Picture (tube, rainbow, N blue to C red):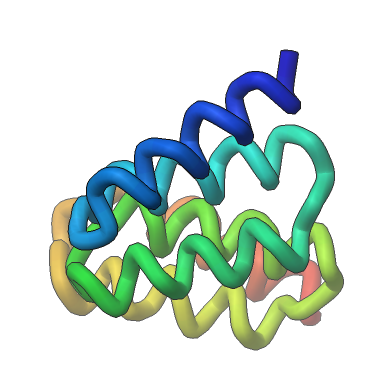
Amino acid sequence: MFGDKITKCKKAVKKRPYDIEAYYQLAEAYREKGMLGEAVAEYKKALTLNFTHAEARKGLASVYIKLGMLDEAITEYRKIVNMNPHYKDAYYHLGLLYGQKG
């Protein structure tokens, strides 16, 4: 199932190399499969195309959390809040992360 999704997303990226959504969907497929290094790389590619894509930042932050990279996750959520101060979910996750850090 995930292999098929990854394959489809890779084809979409190849066909539409400037489509942020294609990179985002590929990153999501990698994240769902537990291929975290690959997910980070694809989220970053998506963000080079559009640095304001909040969902890509949120996905990247979630992978950083899984990798134990809490400072990097905090940085991503802070970027979301700076771009959109009404993004409540980002504040929630920042609170959780600061709580984990102590």
